[in-house]
Image 1 (tube, rainbow, N blue to C red):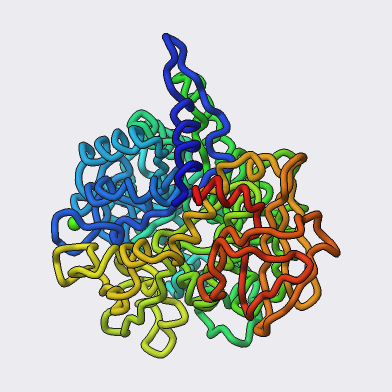
Image 2 (spheres, helix red, strand yellow):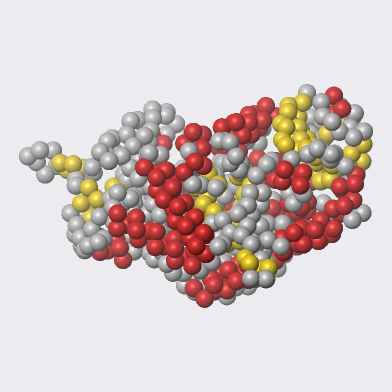
Amino acid sequence: MLSQLAILSIGFASVLGCRTGTEVQVNKDWWKTTVFYQIYPRSFKDSNGDGVGDLNGITSKLDHMVDAGIGVFWISPIYPSPMADFGYDTSDFVNIDPEFGTLDDFDNLVAKAKELNLKVILDFVPNHSSDQHEWFQKSIRREDPYTNYYVWRDAKCESGTNICQPPNNWISVFQGSAWEWNDERGQYYLHQFVKGQPDLNYRDESLRKEMENVLTFWLKRGVDGFRINAVPYLIEDAEFKDEPLSNNPNVPQGYYDSLNHIYSMHQPGTYDIIQSWRDLLDKYATEMKSDTKVIMTEGYGPIDFVMNYYTHGSNVPFNFFFITDARSGSTAEELKSIIDNWMNNMPDNYVANWVIGNHDQRRVASRYGTNREDQMSILCLILPGIAVTYNGDEIGMVDTEISWADTVDPAACNTDPEHYEQYTRDPARTPYQWDSTTSAGFSTNPTTWLPVNRNYISLNLAAQKAVRHSHYHVYQAMTALRKLPIFKQGSLSVEVLAGNVLAITRSVTGATPIVVLVNCSESSVSINLKNSIAVLDQMTVYTSSVSSGITPGRIVTTSSVQLPAAATIVLTSPRLYQLVYGA
Ligand code: NOJ
Ligand code: CA
């Protein structure tokens, strides 16, 4: 399966970024059409049986990424951390948490990845550190240069009294005041997330330099870029004004969404910070004659704010609109409008990206429905530019139900047994399901940091490899398609056809187009494609959603394509199908 194309793509990859004679070829465009894969390290693969995933575990599974057709992976935080927010509370930005391994393990991971032509991206968490970080401890004691490394403010006291409150009404993303009093320093510090995550102060020049040194440290260890965490929170309004109420009747007072965050998010200075990191990465790449170093920016928000990251140095301002605006019952019109909105707002000559899942959201298969998971991953992988996959979504892992007693995510623990399910991110963070052995092949330990989903006996990678038509094979087929010129250079057309069907066409002069048909309705439909798209009379189903019951390889007559309820199919010329599958 996928034989000839796989060989073609290996041949292609091996000429990139390699040394010919004494000359090093720099590949500036490597990231533009590749698949980015997110690894949640605690749950990917445990190498030492302690029930927690680690770096050596990732190294042992690099072949999976090659097999799946992934070009680059980004790893959620692996730095030393008290794990109040599972690594997003960093107590040392330039080391590895012993739970994950050592710097030597990291170097080994990077070296092995390079051998396999895989690029490695690290999560950079610049908005905050852990309260256990040495810098914070020194900042409390006002030891220079750390005195102003964090956002410290005096209490707001009624004049002439000692009745005092926090400096303003800001609320933490994880609920409750965003300010915590520190007795020793005699001031409040800002924490936009949990109180163990004090915000760093980007108005302080020494802090900015310090964070630049962190980036350089990891660049020297061979990383290919950074996914930058919580970007909209980097800098706050200089006057720390109160935020207005959102007046959302569904949100209790004191909860994050009860305010409009016009002073604590998306402030203009944020973009300059990203641009300064872009400049640093470019300078490094030029000096080292290396391939482009990539910046991915994590920022949910209005489209204009997100697009602004493009022109300030981000290669991948995460496009979360499939996450925020699509749902299980989305119509073809709604999906088209999400796609058009991105393509029409993106500045000229930038690269689109499509994200459907990550460690902060419910699983793709649970959010869109188990009959829609392939639909969403096919969409993500056929649209131009970059596709981003969260580990496990390529095999259609579903949410794992976690009781209040077993809940560990601070976003849920800071609420109560009645509301936690609305906020918890644990269900999408359970161990990767490799096979049907102990703990799904994730660990030799039957007890893991979050429980393995009980469905692992049937839902696992090995089982999906063993059958002809599985979520994994759909995924693999789509990543293979992306290696072809028609994907890399082809134009895009997005149309809504009668019967609530979305049609995506990728075409290039001189080749039969690739057509993706998504039946967004829950009834079967018959479509005459010849009315609207320049297709052959007969085309082959290159791949299809598993729940459609349509087997890849089936020939369809394009004047009357039968699409079962919720089915998604990818049509190519019979020749392309044969080239890829060697049939
Ligand atoms: C965004 C990360 O993706 C999330 O997991 C984390 O809790 C917050 N930022 C705080 O760092
Ligand atoms: Ca381990």
